[in-house]
Amino acid sequence: MRLLRVGDPGAEIPAVLDDAGQVRDLRPVTGEINGDFLAGGGVARVRDALTGLPELDVTGMRIGAPVARPGALVCIGLNYSDHAAETAAEPPGEPVVFMKNTNTVVGPNDTVLVPRQSVRTDYEVELAVVLGAKARYLDSPQAAAAVIAGYAISNDVSEREFQIERGGQWTKGKSCETFNPLGPWLVTADEVGDPQTLGLRLSVNGELRQDGNTKNMLFGVHHVIWYLSQFMVLEPGDVVNTGTPAGVALGVNDFGYLRAGDIVELSIDRLGVQRQRIGQA
Picture 1: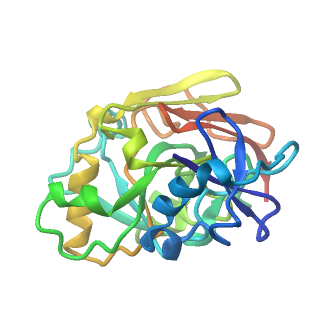
Picture 2: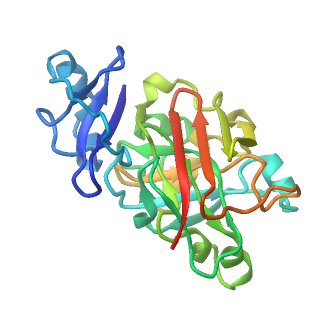
C-alpha cells in the first residue's frame, strides 16, 4: 500500500494510491497520516475500506511528506562501505547516529534551499524507515520488523562546511531548512518486501551521481532499528534515515556541490521518485 499526503503545506489531505494507480481520499478513515494513525491500526482500516474510498483528483496538487511531522528524525552516517571509502573514513564498528531537526522535512518535490553563506551543500539519497509502533529495548534485530510501518525515499541534504569544519557535532550541517525532502509515498513494509534488495539512484542536472543498493549497507535496516532502541525510544511516526551510498559531492570525485537552479532527481526501487529544484535562502 502506498500512502501519501497532498495539498499545500500545513493543509495536506491524506490519501492512498490503489493498485490501479488511482488516488483515493483517506479522510473517511483518518484526518492525518501520523504516529497515532500508524499505531492505531490505520493501515488495516485503509485496506478494509479501500474499494469504497472516493477518488481524489490530485491534478496540479503539491505532494507533501507522506507522514506528518515526525517526533524524531534519526540518521545513520557512513553506513555504506563505498561511501565511507570515498570520504576517507574508517568503516564504523557500530552505527554512527545523529539527529536532524524535524522541521527539515518537506515534500519530495519541494524547493531545497542552499543556506546563506553556504558553498558546500550536498545531496544524499537514502532509504527512510517509518516506525509504526514503539521500539524500546528490542530483543533482537529480527524483532525490528514488527515495529516498521513502511519505507520512503529521503534526501539527507547536508552542508559539509557546517557539518565538518564549524566545530561540534554534525547537527549544524544537517538541520538547515528544507534539508530533508521525504516521499512521495509511505510504502508499507509488506509491499516493499526485503529492504536489503533496493536500488538507490540520484542525479544532478541529468548526471547520474549515486547508484547503489541497500544490500551494501554495513548495518542493515533491522539491525539499525534494534540498535537505536537500545539507546532511545522510537515512537510511531518517527523516521530513521539509514545512510547513503557513494557518489556525494564530498567524495573523491569531480562532482560539484549544489547551486541555485540545479535539478536533483532521486529514486529507490518500489518507492517512487523525487525531483527538487535548488533555490537560495
